Image 1 (cartoon, rainbow, N blue to C red):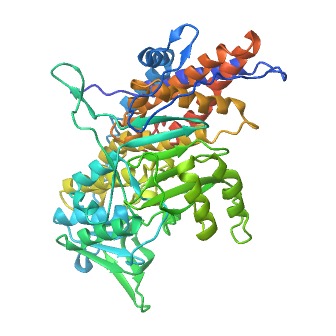
Image 2 (cartoon, helix red, strand yellow; image 1 turned 90 degrees about the vertical axis):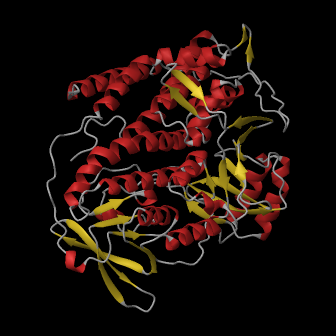
Image 3 (tube, one colour; image 1 turned 90 degrees about the horizontal axis):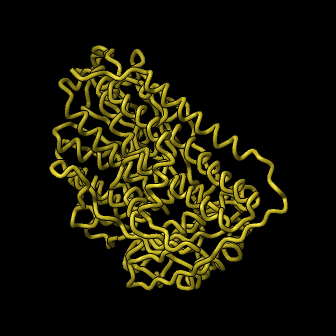
Length: 578
């Protein structure tokens, strides 16, 4: 019998973590000289389109080794890793209490095994998966015509892999969907090329990591045609029916959800009953408030449009421009079109009086690479600028028998890294597997127990790393020199870290791609960037200010990542709560 780990390890890990934060905060409270000035060394990196190597950053002592830098950071954060390891490991042993049988009370009126609210990317994929599993599924979508959105058009390799697991790889065909192989990151006059890294797996025979020969790729596309392909695949799956209508009510029976009520285009009201109702109606979910107390928050919006006749410097890559005050993202969505998204902090300038166009023309355009600037300025003058809030919503544990909520309805992160579809599709794969294990689909209590045992603990591996990385990168890339100079050093350190190449690129890119879902790898690289930023500062400031600034960088890094890890439940003592 396996030994169970008690709550003592969680408390011990938490104490270690708190002490580490207190130590950081204590060091940086020293009064800072107002006369301090910073001069960061600039090393121009020239990278040609054919080059896949990054430049190295040299100091007075020679070339910094990427591997040594990473190992140094890991050594300095071993206390943090030990505490977090205890927390995560203890989560593998859940409460032995059972919910008990909750029989579905409407077996005679049962319309389907599963009702799905929303037939977007996640809803359609889930409908196809469950129908192929032999379950009877009815999906209700408010509007089954082709959607038109400015996001949800770049899928990372991890999402492509989830599509394979769901049997939906063919949905990329026939819609002019190019492959993507990494990113080009621009900072002032420099840029660095980041390639997706080979997938690494653990070799049990040799007891080490082995690399797959194949390098993963992402896919980009126009959102509308891709969703229509998914809906077509769902409707052609056995036992699946797609209906157009607006779901108005969740039907409940003694705190269990047993069905829905929806209204069709003619105003006719229909009631459907099923033992499982899945809510995945997206960002503006109508039923979120009935399930969780958390509400989405947004500090900025993506403003964008499609560029025509724009030849990206690297056509098979996403392009990230570290502009002021926040980043710009551009990537191909077909052989002829490029999507550009500008992150604009709130309050958003008005588009009706031309303030938004003026902002894009005068603030954003001068910071763009030459190849993008001209078509961008043309689009600003000729096209309507569309915007969408960059919402963040940490997943909240809930217990509502008969109901499951996944996708953006439940969990969102900044769209900078394009990880939303990867997380949503991974949720669909997990839910498919859990429903497939049900001995009696009409026993809602069994689903609750399987969720506690399988869904939450397994989901955190994928969701935590992607969600934390997305928001952490955005916080680093949108640094404000007036309010927090240390965050600017973090941004510069992040770019310089990429320039080191080797593990300093392959590690972060595996996380970004969603092919590595180890939260400790994320924590190690994040603090490696912080320590590298502190190291850079130690050689360009007087002795007094350099110590203060270095610890301010470490504090800024801690302040960024700890709230995110807490929000994603990696530091939760009671996750999941039942």
